[in-house]
Length: 362
Image 1: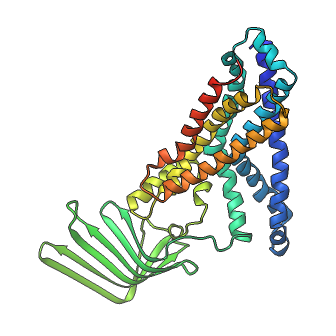
Image 2: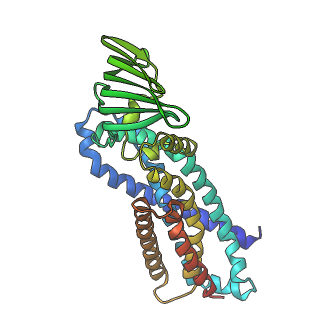
Image 3: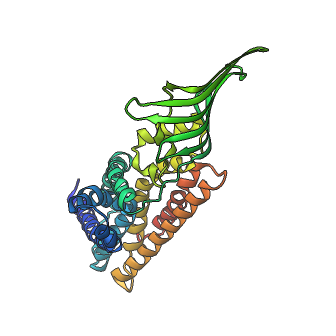
């Protein structure tokens, strides 16, 4: 790297870290002011608030706003360069605009790499402790699990049905397991009035059960009214618990495994989980796009200087966030392809970035 490259690269990184620090402090103060009443009323310690909650909250909020931080950082220091006529001097020295972009993109790629690793592995780990804390002390009724008339596949040819599941007691009522042959014919089913989870044995106890088996036109029936039977199933009480932000608690390998398991069980719509997975990749790529927009906008010397550039940058960031939320909502509530819905903001802003770069000061 030449001296100019090092100068711009260092300016970008240091300004970016400064923006992250400032906005992190603001976010923590605002969040604390909103939740301080819960902290005081609930039986939680200072250590739990700091370690379990805020050490998970800080990576979470920063991962969401990192593209905006990058845009503000680029506009902030590039606008100062333009105001001091440094950009004009660089261009007059024979450095093309495309060549000027090299250190910007190198710094942006460094941030993108960190953001990718954080989104897929680090942030979910912090989210687990943060969300566990919130579910325990703040949002106590955020469980969205299904408890009535539950249908799910335990295996390819085995399906379970529970009319009602009591999460607190971990007891299911009107329980049924249906087994099918490879060609889809019903071969047997087991019915029980009650299935109760036994934590010590990690299995289910079925009460008042009956079993019917079918072999062509021949039927075998067995009924036991008073005795119970213990059985191990590919089913645990946690399968009936679904928190609103559960997708944020899993790293990407676990998230993909969960999506596959949900599809195999035929449980529910997995679009929100697929959107979360694709978002973890699309958000870091946004940093490259917003960096290009920031340089194209701030490199031109205009009246109003840095204030005008920052206003434009904040407007661009606000429009991007609005479009991102809109596309995700649209993709999750329609038959629109999930991956395309997540990447639409980047496609649109990527086009805008290329247009602005082509019109930038040369």
